[in-house]
Length: 461
Image (cartoon, rainbow, N blue to C red):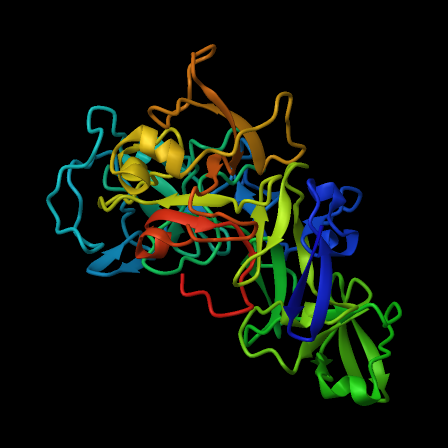
């Protein structure tokens, strides 16, 4: 079976087969890191305090890690509807050992003072986000400084933001605790993994996308490469330049790392990344667009890609772009949740309170939830080569992890340790009727489609 889609510059035909391995190879390559090319992002080297290191991660690029290799996170101050939460630069950390019992009222529509769910088991902030404490005699290094906590202990900070680890991370390179994905809508004040600056020219930047670490220019517009070029040589001339603008290097620019300069003409240099000359797309009308990659032979440029999901997952055309889907073409959804307490603890993983999710997916009834938002079941013996995807066992009545051998438990797929779902209201392949289901378009407490790209139209969510 095939589906024709109109995309910006023309019509592409994509095979809609049962498994991702059967997806058109050139299309799949646009999204996933090739198994034989585990390229990672380069970064700017700088002195680190004793015991700290830089770890490569699948989703977030290079991150700082403690002496055990565990990812370091910060909690930058975030503006909410009725106030701010998070840590302020250089000030006493806001994450303490106090167990919060009521919501803050900083995220409408709920006023402050309501009792939080599952108080008998609710942890304190530091139980989930252990502070990275500085040993006696430790000295600041570069952007690494030390702040004093309310109990008098000393905590490491980077760029003046206090640093933490996450109890959700179990081994070096894990980034289960938080993400650098852009917070949209009225999302909570999430924790973010902290890492060194990417090794890119001053006119470039790296932005975190669902499918990898994408290169953009200083204005935020996507950078592209072309199959018609040769290594370190641009063949885009004449009419090609009507729609593709070379990314020029100033006369004072110098090559750095994987970034070199190709001479287009005497005295005119063009930036090249890993041997591929770089361009912007004149017809791009929005930041971080993918529309230029719809032109045959042209590709968005990434420093590293997300590893491929499990084999039975597929890619489908949806109303706004491309979504990840199960083997039957049903759109995959992720659940987002952050409570409105002063410590803004996440409620999106099986170890966290499930009252929020149960309220959104079934009015508090777990049976309605399972029917409306079915877990994506993993086939017998299924496994993943990527740590981003895993198989976990869930108690569908509670939403928490099931006990070993528990009757009625489900083996389900999880992304970053969180279960993924389909939506009963999606009746056809590629439908996304469940996208933005919940509070604040699904970013605060609700469901979002697993968008691989959503730039065909403006995504209201």
